[in-house]
Amino acid sequence: MGEFDAEILHKLPTVLTAEELLNKAFGRGSKVSGRSREKAINKLATVGNVISSHLNTVMKAHPSYTSMPEFYRELIDITVGLSRLRKSLAALKWAERMVQKVVTKGIRQIKGGKSPDTVIRETYGRVASIIRQIDDELRYLNEVKKVMRKIPVFLNIPVIVVAGYPNVGKSSLVSKLSSVKPEVASYPFTTKEIYVGIIQLKDRRAQIVDTPGMLDRPLSKRNEMERRAILCIKHIADCIVFVIDPSESCGYSVEKQFSLLKEVKELKKPVLEVYSKADMHDMRDRPAFSCKTGEGLEKLKEIIFDVIY
Ligand SMILES: Nc1nc2c(ncn2[C@@H]2O[C@H](COP(=O)(O)OP(=O)(O)OP(=O)(O)O)[C@@H](O)[C@H]2O)c(=O)[nH]1
Ligand SMILES: [Mg+2]
Image (cartoon, rainbow, N blue to C red; front, side, top):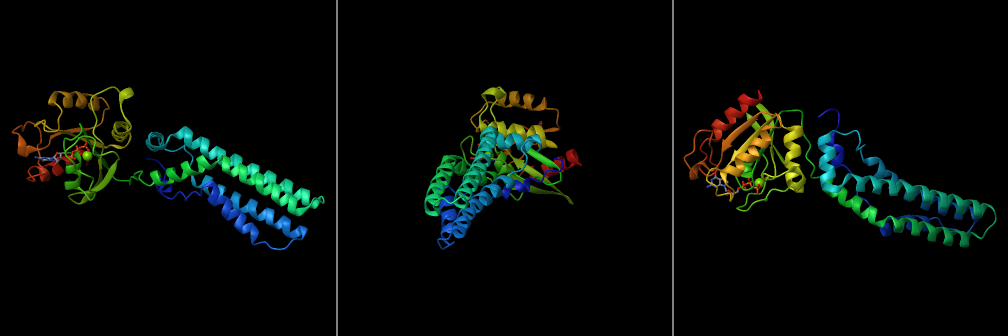
């Protein structure tokens, strides 16, 4: 995954709304008391600094989305929209510059002899108008901060990606084999995000990834959840555990599941084909396991170990 440290995505700062930011800036400005020209200049400078400092903190916390690994870039694009993200950051930059300009102009006017009270009133009005114009962007960037915390960070150890049709038992398996406990439910598309757990394989550790279920259909028709799963298979998997539910209690035919398997195999990564829900069928021409009875789970770990090491 290169030199990129995905932790940076978990450390984005909280972004104030326009009103919160203005309250903070004007509140700080009002603490500069007195009516002399010097004080008035100080007041304006303070307001400008508070706003610049907040906007710069937000902008600087974001990594370069152009140079980060494709996996993260695409995942962020699916999740928050990269062009929207870039536009919002650009809007902050614009606002930061505009506020500085307006403040500098105000200070110049005070120095030039204009009434400090008038200049402060006018400048505050202009600053408020600029910041209110980026309120949508500020709110969106705060959402981005929250969403980014769910983006998985991968360690420098092998990655096993568990994939397959919806409802076949992927999350049940990941939950049995690792430290992460994704939600399990009897309906398709329960898993919407990517869950990463640590799996102990003999004396070694690997990461095991639970992905959202996928249907067998063209990429252009795929939803956000399916695209997340594909990204994992394409970019981060050292090995894919493809789960097939021969009991069809998942609600999808074996035929459809095999058609998806064929597509996954075209991605040219090691694929381990396994049967889930072994308590419900007798198919044993592939490794079979049951999360209900525990059958086949230890054996499956051994097979995975042999594939990745
Ligand atoms: N009998 C039986 N049922 C199982 C087994 N494993 C999972 N199930 C059931 O199958 C259903 C789906 O399980 P999940 O683990 O949520 O399946 P999933 O593949 O993660 O589903 P999505 O996240 O929606 O794609 C649940 O009702 C589970 O209880 C098993 O080994 N035996
Ligand atoms: Mg699931």
